[in-house]
Image (cartoon, rainbow, N blue to C red; front, top):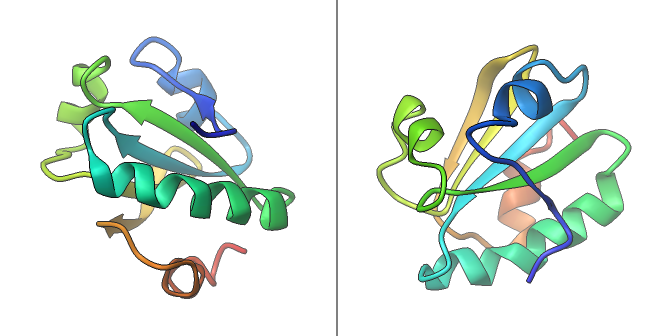
Length: 107
């Protein structure tokens, strides 16, 4: 479905919080239509801006601890992490231009 690396409750700290890169986490679920709609857009952004931002996916059904910790109540939820902290949150599926505008500070 997507080229993005999958992260889990177990790997979240090492893959996201301790990364020296800027990381965008796509909180998603299999049953979520808007999540499936935004996935190819995120793949395009990763292809075009992968040197500046890494995009990973976390399935909220399979990883409830991390979803609960970051208060994910609606998906898709995109959170940008820098230095282990959330620096930007984007809720809902958006067209590529709108996502790129939201992420302009990072890409």
